[in-house]
Length: 291
Image 1 (cartoon, rainbow, N blue to C red):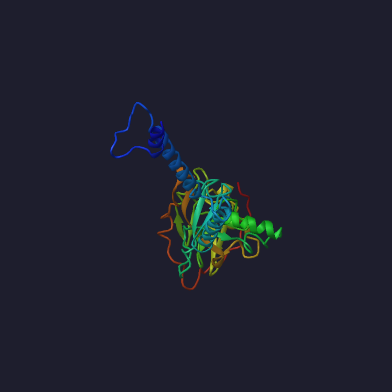
Image 2 (cartoon, rainbow, N blue to C red; image 1 turned 60 degrees about the vertical axis):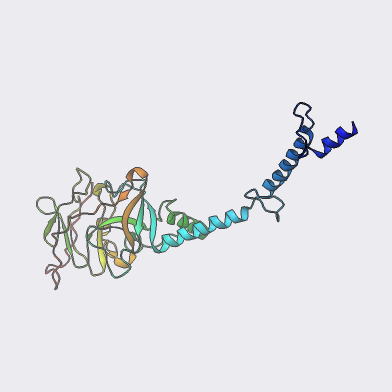
Protein backbone atom coordinates (compact mmCIF):
# COMPACT_ATOMS: atom_id res chain seq x y z
CA UNK A 1 0.00 0.00 0.00
CA UNK A 2 2.79 2.39 0.88
CA UNK A 3 4.61 1.52 -2.30
CA UNK A 4 1.53 2.16 -4.44
CA UNK A 5 0.99 5.46 -2.73
CA UNK A 6 4.55 6.51 -3.42
CA UNK A 7 4.21 5.57 -7.09
CA UNK A 8 1.01 7.55 -7.32
CA UNK A 9 2.60 10.70 -5.92
CA UNK A 10 5.73 10.29 -8.02
CA UNK A 11 3.91 9.61 -11.29
CA UNK A 12 4.92 7.07 -13.95
CA UNK A 13 8.56 5.94 -14.13
CA UNK A 14 10.53 5.23 -17.25
CA UNK A 15 10.97 1.58 -16.25
CA UNK A 16 7.35 0.69 -15.61
CA UNK A 17 4.42 0.99 -18.04
CA UNK A 18 1.53 2.86 -16.41
CA UNK A 19 -1.45 0.79 -15.39
CA UNK A 20 -4.26 2.26 -17.53
CA UNK A 21 -6.95 0.28 -15.65
CA UNK A 22 -5.97 1.35 -12.16
CA UNK A 23 -6.25 5.07 -12.90
CA UNK A 24 -3.30 5.78 -10.65
CA UNK A 25 -1.91 8.22 -13.19
CA UNK A 26 -5.01 10.41 -13.25
CA UNK A 27 -4.05 12.27 -10.10
CA UNK A 28 -0.68 13.58 -11.27
CA UNK A 29 -2.01 14.27 -14.74
CA UNK A 30 -4.90 16.21 -13.34
CA UNK A 31 -2.63 18.12 -11.04
CA UNK A 32 -0.26 19.04 -13.82
CA UNK A 33 -3.07 20.15 -16.13
CA UNK A 34 -4.62 22.25 -13.38
CA UNK A 35 -1.29 23.87 -12.65
CA UNK A 36 -0.69 24.69 -16.31
CA UNK A 37 -4.17 26.12 -16.64
CA UNK A 38 -3.68 28.34 -13.63
CA UNK A 39 -0.38 29.59 -14.94
CA UNK A 40 -1.71 30.27 -18.41
CA UNK A 41 -4.84 31.88 -17.02
CA UNK A 42 -2.80 34.28 -14.96
CA UNK A 43 -0.61 35.04 -17.96
CA UNK A 44 -3.61 35.74 -20.18
CA UNK A 45 -5.13 38.06 -17.61
CA UNK A 46 -2.00 40.15 -17.31
CA UNK A 47 -1.61 40.45 -21.10
CA UNK A 48 -5.25 41.31 -21.87
CA UNK A 49 -5.53 44.35 -24.15
CA UNK A 50 -6.88 47.56 -22.64
CA UNK A 51 -5.52 46.78 -19.17
CA UNK A 52 -2.34 47.90 -17.48
CA UNK A 53 -0.51 46.89 -14.33
CA UNK A 54 -0.21 50.52 -13.27
CA UNK A 55 -3.97 51.04 -13.14
CA UNK A 56 -4.64 47.69 -11.48
CA UNK A 57 -6.57 46.32 -14.48
CA UNK A 58 -8.52 49.48 -15.35
CA UNK A 59 -9.13 50.16 -19.10
CA UNK A 60 -6.53 52.36 -20.77
CA UNK A 61 -9.01 55.07 -21.73
CA UNK A 62 -6.34 57.76 -21.79
CA UNK A 63 -4.78 56.20 -24.88
CA UNK A 64 -8.16 56.08 -26.60
CA UNK A 65 -8.81 59.75 -25.83
CA UNK A 66 -5.37 60.78 -27.07
CA UNK A 67 -5.72 58.82 -30.32
CA UNK A 68 -9.19 60.28 -30.90
CA UNK A 69 -7.96 63.83 -30.23
CA UNK A 70 -5.02 63.33 -32.59
CA UNK A 71 -7.35 62.11 -35.36
CA UNK A 72 -9.68 65.10 -34.94
CA UNK A 73 -6.73 67.51 -34.95
CA UNK A 74 -5.38 65.93 -38.12
CA UNK A 75 -8.77 66.18 -39.86
CA UNK A 76 -9.10 69.83 -38.83
CA UNK A 77 -5.65 70.62 -40.25
CA UNK A 78 -6.51 68.92 -43.54
CA UNK A 79 -9.86 70.71 -43.59
CA UNK A 80 -8.22 74.09 -42.99
CA UNK A 81 -5.41 73.82 -45.53
CA UNK A 82 -6.21 71.12 -48.12
CA UNK A 83 -9.82 69.94 -48.53
CA UNK A 84 -12.86 70.94 -46.49
CA UNK A 85 -16.13 68.99 -46.31
CA UNK A 86 -19.14 71.17 -47.01
CA UNK A 87 -22.78 70.20 -46.46
CA UNK A 88 -25.24 71.37 -49.14
CA UNK A 89 -28.22 72.88 -47.27
CA UNK A 90 -30.47 74.08 -50.13
CA UNK A 91 -31.71 73.36 -53.65
CA UNK A 92 -29.94 76.31 -55.26
CA UNK A 93 -27.37 74.16 -57.11
CA UNK A 94 -29.63 71.38 -58.36
CA UNK A 95 -29.19 69.19 -60.30
CA UNK A 96 -25.40 69.46 -59.95
CA UNK A 97 -25.57 69.35 -56.14
CA UNK A 98 -28.49 68.13 -54.09
CA UNK A 99 -29.68 68.81 -50.56
CA UNK A 100 -27.69 66.66 -48.13
CA UNK A 101 -24.70 66.18 -50.42
CA UNK A 102 -21.35 66.48 -48.70
CA UNK A 103 -18.81 67.91 -51.08
CA UNK A 104 -15.05 68.25 -50.69
CA UNK A 105 -13.81 71.76 -51.43
CA UNK A 106 -10.32 71.87 -52.92
CA UNK A 107 -8.55 74.67 -51.02
CA UNK A 108 -5.38 74.29 -53.08
CA UNK A 109 -7.13 75.01 -56.39
CA UNK A 110 -6.48 78.78 -56.28
CA UNK A 111 -3.63 78.93 -53.78
CA UNK A 112 -0.70 79.03 -56.21
CA UNK A 113 -1.63 81.90 -58.51
CA UNK A 114 -4.58 80.33 -60.35
CA UNK A 115 -7.96 82.10 -60.11
CA UNK A 116 -11.56 80.98 -60.44
CA UNK A 117 -12.70 80.49 -64.03
CA UNK A 118 -16.09 80.72 -65.68
CA UNK A 119 -18.00 77.51 -65.01
CA UNK A 120 -16.21 76.63 -61.74
CA UNK A 121 -18.41 75.70 -58.79
CA UNK A 122 -16.95 77.56 -55.82
CA UNK A 123 -17.55 78.00 -52.10
CA UNK A 124 -17.03 81.54 -50.83
CA UNK A 125 -17.47 83.73 -47.79
CA UNK A 126 -20.31 86.10 -48.62
CA UNK A 127 -19.50 88.64 -45.90
CA UNK A 128 -19.54 92.08 -47.51
CA UNK A 129 -21.21 90.89 -50.72
CA UNK A 130 -24.11 88.54 -49.93
CA UNK A 131 -24.15 89.29 -46.20
CA UNK A 132 -23.46 92.78 -44.91
CA UNK A 133 -21.68 91.79 -41.72
CA UNK A 134 -20.86 88.73 -39.65
CA UNK A 135 -23.78 87.82 -37.37
CA UNK A 136 -23.07 87.99 -33.66
CA UNK A 137 -23.56 84.96 -31.47
CA UNK A 138 -22.20 82.81 -28.68
CA UNK A 139 -18.43 82.58 -29.32
CA UNK A 140 -18.12 79.11 -27.75
CA UNK A 141 -21.13 77.77 -29.62
CA UNK A 142 -19.86 79.38 -32.81
CA UNK A 143 -16.48 77.71 -32.38
CA UNK A 144 -18.07 74.30 -31.89
CA UNK A 145 -20.33 74.85 -34.88
CA UNK A 146 -17.41 75.91 -37.05
CA UNK A 147 -15.49 72.80 -36.02
CA UNK A 148 -18.44 70.54 -36.84
CA UNK A 149 -18.96 72.33 -40.17
CA UNK A 150 -15.27 71.93 -40.98
CA UNK A 151 -15.71 68.17 -40.60
CA UNK A 152 -18.91 68.17 -42.67
CA UNK A 153 -21.05 67.26 -39.66
CA UNK A 154 -23.14 70.45 -39.56
CA UNK A 155 -24.53 72.99 -41.96
CA UNK A 156 -22.03 75.64 -43.04
CA UNK A 157 -21.98 79.11 -41.52
CA UNK A 158 -24.68 81.49 -42.70
CA UNK A 159 -22.00 83.51 -44.50
CA UNK A 160 -20.78 80.58 -46.66
CA UNK A 161 -22.30 79.97 -50.10
CA UNK A 162 -21.79 77.62 -53.04
CA UNK A 163 -22.46 78.94 -56.58
CA UNK A 164 -21.20 78.68 -60.15
CA UNK A 165 -18.90 81.37 -61.57
CA UNK A 166 -20.58 82.96 -64.59
CA UNK A 167 -18.44 86.08 -65.02
CA UNK A 168 -14.90 87.05 -64.00
CA UNK A 169 -13.14 90.42 -63.89
CA UNK A 170 -13.85 92.50 -67.02
CA UNK A 171 -16.65 90.27 -68.35
CA UNK A 172 -19.94 91.76 -69.50
CA UNK A 173 -22.77 89.44 -68.45
CA UNK A 174 -26.21 90.10 -69.93
CA UNK A 175 -29.54 88.37 -69.51
CA UNK A 176 -31.37 87.92 -71.43
CA UNK A 177 -31.05 88.32 -75.22
CA UNK A 178 -34.07 88.35 -77.51
CA UNK A 179 -34.17 84.55 -77.38
CA UNK A 180 -34.06 84.47 -73.57
CA UNK A 181 -30.43 83.33 -73.33
CA UNK A 182 -27.49 84.43 -71.18
CA UNK A 183 -24.54 86.07 -72.95
CA UNK A 184 -20.99 86.75 -71.74
CA UNK A 185 -18.90 89.22 -73.74
CA UNK A 186 -21.51 89.03 -76.49
CA UNK A 187 -21.36 85.23 -76.81
CA UNK A 188 -24.39 83.06 -76.08
CA UNK A 189 -23.84 80.56 -73.23
CA UNK A 190 -25.77 77.30 -73.53
CA UNK A 191 -26.28 76.32 -69.90
CA UNK A 192 -27.02 72.59 -69.97
CA UNK A 193 -26.39 72.33 -66.22
CA UNK A 194 -29.61 74.24 -65.39
CA UNK A 195 -32.65 72.47 -63.95
CA UNK A 196 -34.85 71.44 -66.88
CA UNK A 197 -37.55 74.05 -67.38
CA UNK A 198 -35.66 76.83 -65.61
CA UNK A 199 -34.96 79.98 -67.61
CA UNK A 200 -31.51 81.61 -67.29
CA UNK A 201 -33.02 84.43 -65.24
CA UNK A 202 -36.41 85.95 -64.56
CA UNK A 203 -34.60 89.16 -63.53
CA UNK A 204 -33.00 91.01 -66.46
CA UNK A 205 -29.54 92.44 -65.91
CA UNK A 206 -26.61 93.91 -67.83
CA UNK A 207 -23.43 94.22 -65.77
CA UNK A 208 -19.67 94.46 -66.18
CA UNK A 209 -17.71 92.56 -63.54
CA UNK A 210 -15.03 94.73 -61.86
CA UNK A 211 -11.44 93.46 -61.65
CA UNK A 212 -10.82 90.81 -58.96
CA UNK A 213 -14.54 90.18 -58.63
CA UNK A 214 -16.88 87.33 -59.63
CA UNK A 215 -20.48 87.20 -60.82
CA UNK A 216 -21.97 83.96 -59.46
CA UNK A 217 -25.29 82.20 -59.98
CA UNK A 218 -26.94 78.97 -58.86
CA UNK A 219 -27.83 76.17 -61.30
CA UNK A 220 -31.42 76.09 -60.04
CA UNK A 221 -32.12 79.69 -60.98
CA UNK A 222 -35.67 79.86 -59.68
CA UNK A 223 -34.48 78.63 -56.24
CA UNK A 224 -31.16 80.46 -56.01
CA UNK A 225 -30.40 83.67 -54.15
CA UNK A 226 -27.24 84.81 -55.92
CA UNK A 227 -25.56 87.87 -57.48
CA UNK A 228 -28.86 88.93 -59.08
CA UNK A 229 -30.43 89.50 -55.65
CA UNK A 230 -27.70 91.93 -54.60
CA UNK A 231 -27.51 94.21 -57.63
CA UNK A 232 -28.48 97.22 -55.52
CA UNK A 233 -26.33 96.31 -52.52
CA UNK A 234 -22.81 97.57 -51.83
CA UNK A 235 -20.57 95.65 -54.21
CA UNK A 236 -23.46 95.00 -56.59
CA UNK A 237 -23.54 91.28 -55.83
CA UNK A 238 -19.93 90.79 -56.96
CA UNK A 239 -17.83 88.39 -54.86
CA UNK A 240 -14.19 89.36 -54.18
CA UNK A 241 -11.80 86.70 -55.46
CA UNK A 242 -9.98 86.65 -52.12
CA UNK A 243 -13.22 85.59 -50.42
CA UNK A 244 -13.29 82.30 -52.33
CA UNK A 245 -12.68 79.35 -49.99
CA UNK A 246 -12.02 76.85 -52.77
CA UNK A 247 -13.42 74.89 -55.69
CA UNK A 248 -16.01 72.14 -55.22
CA UNK A 249 -14.33 69.15 -56.84
CA UNK A 250 -15.87 66.00 -55.33
CA UNK A 251 -19.15 64.67 -53.95
CA UNK A 252 -18.10 62.48 -51.02
CA UNK A 253 -21.51 61.55 -49.57
CA UNK A 254 -23.90 59.81 -49.96
CA UNK A 255 -22.02 56.87 -51.45
CA UNK A 256 -24.56 56.54 -54.23
CA UNK A 257 -23.48 59.97 -55.52
CA UNK A 258 -19.77 59.50 -54.92
CA UNK A 259 -18.16 61.26 -57.91
CA UNK A 260 -16.38 64.36 -59.09
CA UNK A 261 -18.36 67.56 -59.59
CA UNK A 262 -18.97 67.60 -63.32
CA UNK A 263 -17.28 70.37 -65.28
CA UNK A 264 -18.83 72.29 -68.17
CA UNK A 265 -17.79 73.43 -71.62
CA UNK A 266 -20.51 76.10 -71.73
CA UNK A 267 -17.98 78.95 -71.57
CA UNK A 268 -15.33 77.54 -73.91
CA UNK A 269 -16.33 79.85 -76.78
CA UNK A 270 -16.50 83.01 -74.64
CA UNK A 271 -13.72 85.44 -75.61
CA UNK A 272 -11.63 87.41 -73.16
CA UNK A 273 -12.99 90.87 -72.35
CA UNK A 274 -11.57 93.72 -74.47
CA UNK A 275 -8.33 95.21 -73.11
CA UNK A 276 -9.85 98.68 -72.89
CA UNK A 277 -13.03 97.47 -71.28
CA UNK A 278 -16.52 97.31 -72.72
CA UNK A 279 -17.47 100.61 -74.38
CA UNK A 280 -20.91 100.71 -72.81
CA UNK A 281 -19.69 100.13 -69.25
CA UNK A 282 -22.00 98.70 -66.62
CA UNK A 283 -25.61 99.20 -67.52
CA UNK A 284 -28.16 100.35 -64.99
CA UNK A 285 -29.88 97.21 -63.63
CA UNK A 286 -33.43 96.85 -64.82
CA UNK A 287 -36.05 96.01 -62.27
CA UNK A 288 -37.95 92.81 -62.38
CA UNK A 289 -39.24 89.97 -60.25
CA UNK A 290 -37.96 86.44 -60.15
CA UNK A 291 -39.98 83.33 -60.26
